[in-house]
Length: 72
Image 1 (cartoon, rainbow, N blue to C red):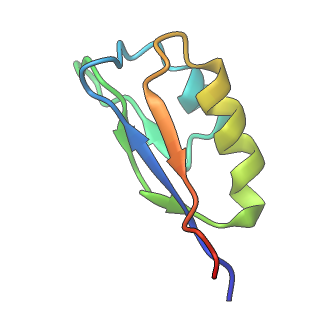
Image 2 (image 1 turned 120 degrees about the vertical axis):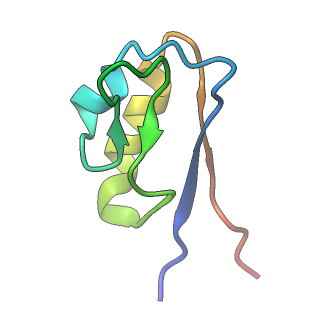
């Protein structure tokens, strides 16, 4: 069993630029009329991690954070 990485978007920082949606539309979404990104999944597995990390790096507002549970 692999640990999932938890994804969070800070609504106070997010400006809905949408770069994260372009990079990984299965995790991020900007609903019509919304001023912030909405998470479609709050945790991702290893196959999605590289794209989600890219989305976090690409965010101009630095609103995306990732947290990987520590393994014992």
